[in-house]
Length: 258
Image (spheres, rainbow, N blue to C red):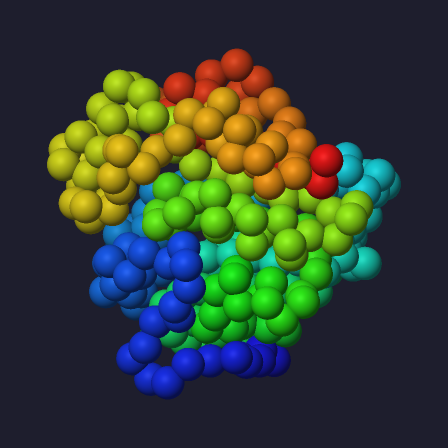
């Protein structure tokens, strides 16, 4: 069973200092396609196993969880920010986490809630923002922040809210796109205009962050950033893999309280 709390009136988007209304509206228009592996979110479906592997590796190492546990996240309260249709929320719930999943689009939350309910998963989906959760005094062991920072209006303010949501021994996991010519070629020209993997306008290259820039934002908000890990796509196998060296396009980073 799923629950949906802290919702806003029908048709409204959650407001907050860092919410970019244009970004929210863009993804709300294609919200019905979240669980279609051949639809507009096909690239996320392809990337998801690699994202989940990174999250699991980082969380298990941070909390010293024994390998082979069937529900390794059973003792953890986890926040999935910008959850979309629930592509990460659902696997986190299956790993045993107490999941709160939030999105600034009510349409995304409705899509995610329905899909999780059909799978018999108990996830606390909320149409709200990181700022609102921080103002309410919510705290989490794990914050999952996948493909969000390149869509917010103010990265520093957004990460400040995220920092307030972390428990003292917690960990935050972020992924985004590097601001490099290669990323422009692959993520915008290739993915949006040539291959049509993503709707045109899904990304703004100017909002991409270099790893050192993201690390600086985290440090400015009293967080310690760990070394980035790259997500590298193989066009031959049509699969993603983690890389300790290649962060030229997509990358992930973990952070703890300094």
